[in-house]
Image (cartoon, rainbow over all chains, first blue to last red; front, side):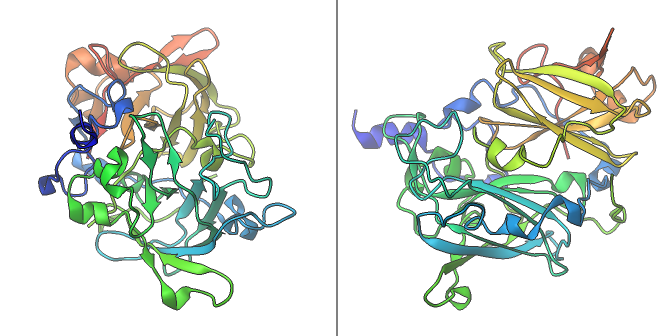
Length: 244
Length: 147
């Protein structure tokens, strides 16, 4: 069997009909097999579409949480980058006060986690976790280092493209999103079943950040811009209330 | 067009279960609610994440699953139900279920579920609290919702 033959089982052809929906039983990503639901999903009544979600106050974050390069005594090794963008609903309205949480591997492709046994060094100056609330225009910004690609056991010679994990809470319960941000032009894209589990190429492209020369800080850091669009906000959305 | 979902992966605790105290209590004086997250082979899922939301009371919490697939929350005693999102490696999108603290009788959401599967959404009462196991697949699979 050639490598190309093997790949055809790992990455399926594009299917634009799926739109933004990820294929939850994507066979090339092995862990889906016994975990993705295989019984019919039940549609909730219409009124639950506009159910308010949790709201997180300023006490959830501190300003240091958004700079992953200053959480230890020294600076982490790696390519310093700025990752920024807006959180919007599908009508283009900014979501303010949205909690954004991120986590990532270090520059060598190693996570600070007991389960990660990739033989690449840990960085004593990098934890790889950040969070912030979006501002009034829905903007977020993190300073971090560019994560490395890393091998994983999914199939022979499997490597994840470099990515940052993102978790977002929108205004509505149904706007909850956990996803991954990728970097433009990554040569591993055609071989990664997780990235390709979004089978519509236009939707898949929404997972890829844009190199942003305008926000690059000379002599200091490159910048990448990535807007995140949560589901429909709904005109009848319940007003925001602080939860305890 | 909305941004697609991707799996939370095996290392989510770095970003989502961290230093800001115990997130597992929706209410400090709530009822203990424990359960195990199972895969389709009946094996516990040890890298799952459960988020619970009492929308009526505005109370939220989350718990990772441990080596035995167990999660533990405290849920408000006065809530009829909590909305739940399940995240895990292997789940490319989180899954929505609902825990009724007690059989609600006539309820529009439970009523929309096939009668044979309604029991998967109702917590079991035990001497020291509530139990709610989550089965991702199989004949006894928990009901998951879409919107």
